Length: 81
Image (cartoon, rainbow, N blue to C red; front, side):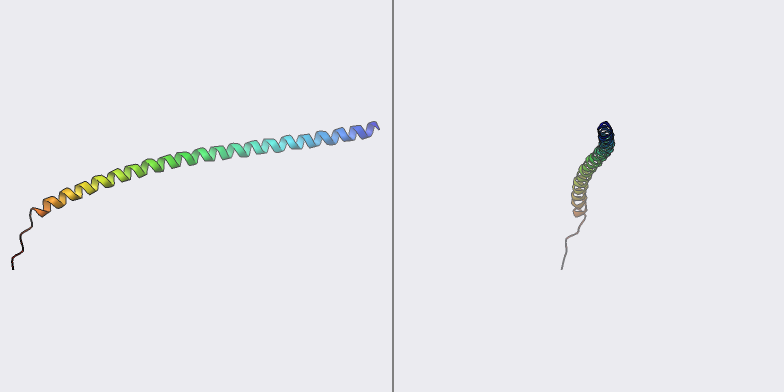
């Protein structure tokens, strides 16, 4: 009877050890996912800032193009037939 209890206790201890090891592995995997998500957030914010800069530069270039067109229009000669 005692040998059965000892065998059961040994088996229970092994199962608990396996569960603890699995839990540690899961915790490390979750930590890696968290780090990856943090990196993705940083890239997303960087991309967003870049898009804002591009939009601003595009608006500025459009304004400069309109100004340049206005200047060029002053040099056009009327067409005579």
